[in-house]
Length: 459
Image (cartoon, rainbow, N blue to C red):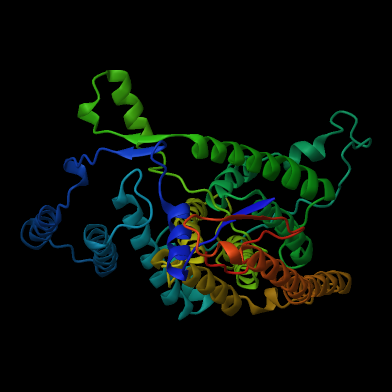
């Protein structure tokens, strides 16, 4: 049974949607408006510190007659000055905790990273790898790709002293990163359905591309039990529990010095690293063709970002355990959190007419990373896919296209006819009450589809 309040105009309907989606409930959210020293703008202070450092370098610091050393310092100083400028003058983003400056910093880092990617794209593969040597002299050495396939026996009778050695060999540091990674990804996506699709699709992509990257070659139980079911599944489960906690939690903010007890002050400090307020994501992927295409786009971009992680370290000869990989993943997670919030608002807020700045940068970064992989190792990514894998993808894509046509062009048209008939009956029934001074609530049951686009009635 679906209940819809009949509104009198498009503007009223738009306002009602916006209010229901974005207002913080009065009983769950409050803020006393306290603005402390750390929340005020300090543009002149930052400028004074920056100029003071530059004066020290120009006047008091000894001159080093080393071109390579001076070039590296100059580049690092330029990047730091740009980030400092961005953190100081860039407008706040969608997130406020632990401090808006944190998210301004991550946004500026995304700009610097994208500029670095564009510079790398204009180099040769050899020169690009040589550039990484300036960051870490140990980089640039050919990697020994580890394959997780081979002997796939869970219980190996040939090794009686340790028959489960195949399982122990798979339990490395990346098991923990799988689990915590999917926990955090669930907090970013805030949707069980999307997380499950991503998890399954990436395992299918590993099957598809294991002839290109040996790292993708795994045993069947490693794919579906250890990865999909245990690591990913448990990560998603704990992520959903965390989302449930944030959703029911109340957010009442007071200034630290207005809290009388030390326990209260400590709780307030800890809460500073949690959400300022909370919005549950209801993607409603099948509610319209536009949202369905947007959802498919999100899935495509997400999977491409995951693949870039493996192909970039393979092409650029960066060991999996190197800190550059971890730094990229952490930043990409932070960028993704802001991007998904901006994309959700773009899809749901009638007043939002363009995607956010972080979403734009994230799309540019993922695209540029893929172009670097394509330019530097075209031979690898164009290795022919086995015929049975091609057949599987053709069947899957055909089914997806067929379901899309049926859902949004055939089934939707039949539902529109039914809704029109229901609307006509309702209009005829309430015609004698049109001049009455009260609001009419219409309850209509439509199997298989929520009545979000019912016939407009003015009463």
